[in-house]
Image (cartoon, rainbow, N blue to C red):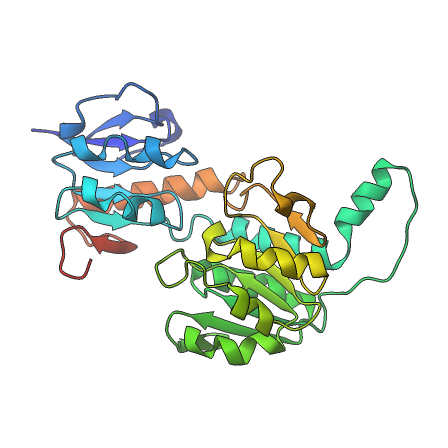
Length: 316
């Protein structure tokens, strides 16, 4: 019996898909495109609520592969109890590196150079000059040094930063220098003028940026979050912003979406973008390449890329 593959990208967008699967388009609509029990490969709809993405999982009894189009898979990990054993969960490493790194640099530069103030002044037809910090000669700490963190560093280099320190779950060597383990954060935080968060959301990183973390940041430092909102304790961040000791640029927040009336909207020294690191013109061509490559590997029984876990294994 032919196995189904559910894709959230219209089939006409692909020049060619590998033979061996029956392809169905589903982008989270109320009606399913076929019987979920026949679905072997589920490419998760992008930018849809978690409840929508998880809705067919408990009916997909023949599922073998869940491919997200996001770098983070925390929403699917939260739904593991709905997925049958033996399913590979894979992320979209490489799809969002360029656009998310671009936004990290955009938020950093805009915050340091006072761009939000320029916009407000322009709206009121006021000419307001002033002295602002440059990114040049600053010390930058990247927390979460995977593909996105490395892409952020690639874009920092031309700006003549004084130093880049890298932190990941465990220490290792990289092409640009040592990657320090999370345990070294207390030593590294006081040295950083800019702290950029690009770490996955896991049990270890949830609430990582708490009152103690923030207290170790130097006076006047900038916190940039392009990871997940829950990596930062919003309640701990607000007093640091309101006192003026720290500033922040946040593409993600906790809660998210940030509701009207939340004090973070009006906190001084904060720039907020509405989780737009990934959805750019760079997304579709990269997403299609990842999907075709993974489908080809699946039908040819070749090792899959970017496997985060296999459901039902002892390590989960």
